[in-house]
Image (cartoon, rainbow, N blue to C red):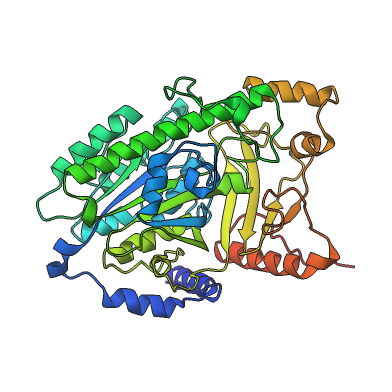
Length: 494
């Protein structure tokens, strides 16, 4: 009994903390959601939900986010039909923990999903289960959902997963299939055919683009490497440009896949009754992207269309988190979010006169894949907090140098390693990518320094901001029962 009481108090404290970091009170949302609670007679009018996920896709790499080089006409048209979220952050720059947050409305730390290869605990519910209980037909399709442990795990891991029945996702939804990008649209059609008459549906449809390895033949007319505008933190070499162009090509291919998916909804007469969300599961596998807590790692595209509820061509620069999708979609379905969810519904942001629903977002970085901790690509322990103006990154393993996720073996990175060893890289690039250690804390003014090139931690003019963000990160880590040492240590003992 004592343990259950303590857990309840912990959940209450955590939700209170999140509510105080928001201009929308938890009590107000609870009252609003309760007033829309599910009634059997309302189920026929509930919206369908289609969540389309790209893989390793940063917000900067869609035309409607201000990128003049990339060709994404269908995503741009889709954004014009709904709302574009300019500051959507995932809770982790890695597939598994980020997708776990999207599905559960909770942080990876809070649900024990910071290790990439972990299966989602059975006692942690995903929001499609709640939709299913309320009469929705639910499913996942396309690229793997990543929440049953790694398919390519060693035999020792597989035996444990099988022995204890830890692969649970197929039991949580009505339909669970995985497959190639070509299979994804066919699975969508198969899923829709299985939906019972009069029942609303939810489907997460995942695509592999633009995940590495990058396909040199992704589209008929590739992007021209020589014409691309490189981000300021990119080294400018021919091999880097060619790699970046291939990344753009895969996003253009994803753009055409989205067009096919939307056409299926239109052809089936489902477009008007379906909330469609297009989102990246985490940031790009590029420099300071996937596996890091920089903007390219955790800020992703999020586009939402809901006819009759969202004004076409809307946009917002308010902060939202990956853990906010679950309570948002539950509210759209007329359901209350469980008290365990730390996410915040962002339905209020669909209104033109909306105030913010949160003032900060948090993200974590843990183990990646199943490799041993030989470098920071396989194993890193970092946390961050993002405000409307600043970001604080806490590198608990500051002694480990930067190492890229998924492209350390590629030609363009090996060339940069050689250039650094020969002293042919600029001091700034050498510092960013080949310093033997990293700062324990990094603080960036995202307004004046959106590319995060000037670490202002320890500066007198930002001391108050640094203290405030560290204190809020400390509180979040305590309430989420984070296992890392806290960023604000006790005073030294004399």
